[in-house]
Image (cartoon, rainbow, N blue to C red; front, top):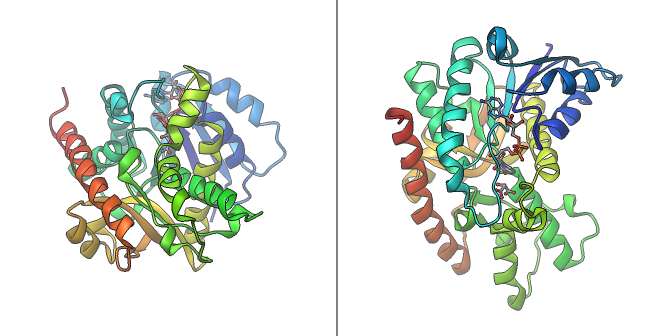
Length: 329
Ligand code: NAD
Ligand code: LMR
């Protein structure tokens, strides 16, 4: 089966390198790029790469979004403004909520079966917005909607490897659960595979670095935006895993921010956290998010404290997204 992939926000800091990586993937036969600017140029540039994917670029004119999204199998959304120093992800809400809502409305119309991967911040709120829009249009399949939290996992692998002296960070599997901002990000080092031993005097700083890794990049970019290249890597890694699952590969697990009551095994996690949307390790398969794996049993005392703070912050972010979808300004 040929796979049509779409990047919405394809001309941006994340969109361009993400489109490059997707263009090189042998899993994709067609790649459509959509943005409000510059997609003809980005598509022309990438079209010279000698990989199989047929590439095209669309702008809003002539119903470009509809043509780009039509019958897509997978749509990755990094559209929206990024942070500048001093901003929280929630400060992006006023602009990005409307952008995501508009894109999802078009997807619901022309690609209701697409697997949707949302990168646009604040993920804790944009994913609930997307779910509510899809529900209102009668096409919500929770197994097909993902908030991309892979960058938190990638950071955890990298920072833990530095501390434990692991030369290949990708050999580590470290669940990171909760949401995607500050204290809503909960790394579970106690569940790392293979097991890692974090020195006690390094634990608090390591947790903070995973939770606030985004701020590290925002500060270093000094007004020029937030993480783009590492995010493109993370977005591609997650998209590839979704596609490999769809193609029938077994045993693929990656955390993602999903609507728990709609994913097998998610109900119990939603009850325990009080959050319907939450990032947990997801088993990916031929129908998307096939199973939510419960990471809450066996948390150590530090992790229980982190989880409490996470849930307190995350509930408000979720409610804000749901309310926006029902009563946009
Ligand atoms: P950017 O400004 O470089 O690019 C955003 C792109 O979106 C621009 O090309 C812009 O033209 C486009 N755009 C705006 N409105 C659009 C619309 N209605 N339809 C299609 N395209 C539209 O920003 P960036 O650095 O690429 O970041 C994009 C988003 O990703 C931000 O919200 C950022 O906070 C978020 N982000 C999320 C994560 C994560 O882990 N989930 C990581 C990094 C960044
Ligand atoms: C990140 O974690 O790098 C992104 O969410 C971008 C940001 O605003 O920090």
